[in-house]
Every structure is written in structure tokens, then in C-alpha cells.
Length: 180
Image 1 (spheres, rainbow, N blue to C red):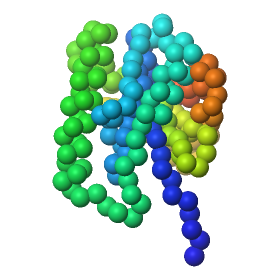
Image 2: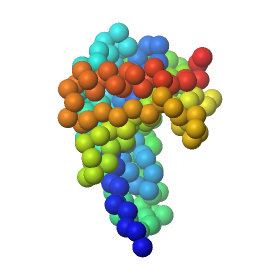
Image 3: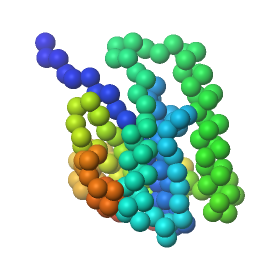
């Protein structure tokens, strides 16, 4: 029987709206959750240079945490506790962003965005995978297999901030946001 390597991942997502760019750190507990301790940040879109994007995305994905043990399911109580802790932090992050950019609330702030899913198999490779998304009403989804040509990008964690930022911008430009 063929053995496949265990994929321990770090994740960070990038959101771009007309007014801002936001980077959200994720922690992995059987699914992705807003990170309780990782680096999440936002900036006015005019200030979102490739250098800023690369530097802050790197901080975010490097501070992401992976808590899964392969083959061992999490107890429901653990997942409930994680949801209870991560949910309010995500709401607070998006609430502060909404206030800073004069949106009604966090939901309104995140509604019309392009989003890139960032994933790094940090024990296996130095390559970060960036996947452009499609807008889906109040959320985002990946592209179906066969439709995803030109929507998946790779860049080394060791790239310069500017190079990392430029690849993220390419991925954002490949998105089909829900405001088009």
C-alpha cells in the first residue's frame, strides 16, 4: 500500500475591496478558523504596495498554526471551544475594519471582495499555493476542476516581500469577485 506524506498546512487568506486590502491568518482544527494568535491586518488600498502585501502575508502565513493529528478526530467539545474563541475574534477584526473604512458592519465590509486562498505545506515544500476565488453572494469558492486554469499561483516563502506581493496581486487579479 502506498504511503502519502502527511500534509501539515499553514493558511492565510487575502481580501481586496475597492477601499482596502485585508490579510486574515487561519489556524487549522479539522477546518480553517480565524487565528486566535496569528497575524491578521488590513490597510487602505492605496497603501497596499507589493512590499506591504508580501511582508504582511508572510507574517500571517508563518504565524498560522496546525493543530490536527492525522487519523485522530477532534472531540466535539474541542471544536465547539475553538469556534467559541475564534468566531468573536473574527467578528472583532472585521468590525474594526468596517469602522475604519465606514462600512455598516463587518459583513458589508467583506461582501464585495476578491479573495485569494493561501496554503503552505510547510514541512514538505517552500512553495506557497495561492488560489484565486469566485464570489458566491456572501462568500467565496474555488474554481471547479477544468475551470481553474490561470487561477492557481505558486511562490516561494523565501521570495522577497515585493515578489511575494506581486504574485498575490496576480492571484487577486485572476479572481472573479462577486461585485462584477
